[in-house]
Amino acid sequence: MGDVNSILHIEDRIVGSQVQEIELRDFKQCLLDTGLTELKTVGRNYTWTNGHTYSCIDKAFVNALWMQTWTHLECSILDPRFSYHSPLCVKIEAGEDTGPKPFKFFNYLADHPEFMQTAETSWKSQRQVSSMSEVWRKIKRLKQPMSGLSNHYFQGIQSRVIMIRTQLKALKEQMRCVQGDNQMEQYQAEKSLKAQLEKWRNLKESATK
Image (cartoon, rainbow, N blue to C red; front, side, top):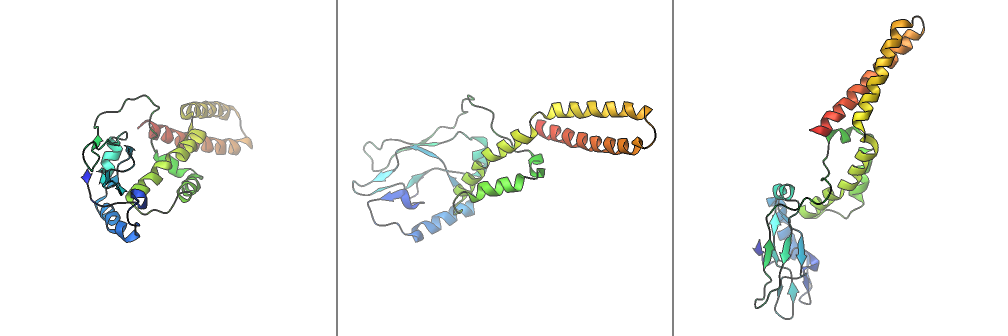
């Protein structure tokens, strides 16, 4: 965190000389090589001025572990007072747990027939990736469609397990008495119910890990 003396995005400078893509290339490549991404900022739009040009050359960066550990972190751009530069402030403390639980990705979602289409639609709806921060934002935006897929198709896992067990128990009781042509159908039904039970039990275990 600090004065990097370089801009990262075209919109990071106004009024002064026109921003050229070549100015941004090395900085973006450096972030890709180091696995860093720009931390979300709040407050002022620009961190440095000489009274004529305004630019954002003071920045805070984090890696993937920081983003996962402190999801609430943001960098506050404060008033510059007597300096050309605005001070940056990052408060590293536990955020208040006032909202819903964060979405957790479960491996069973990848087995759903609509998983790939849902992920591809979300990914392609956003602009081309040119930095690690944009990759992170794309992944973050996948949360909503993945959460919707999970809630729509996989809610009530415990009740499904109980229902299938009840059906399997009733079928086994019928199989004690019924003979003849219906036996093969019952064996197939039993096999199907056992496969469903195994599937939903595995999903239940994944959801509780």
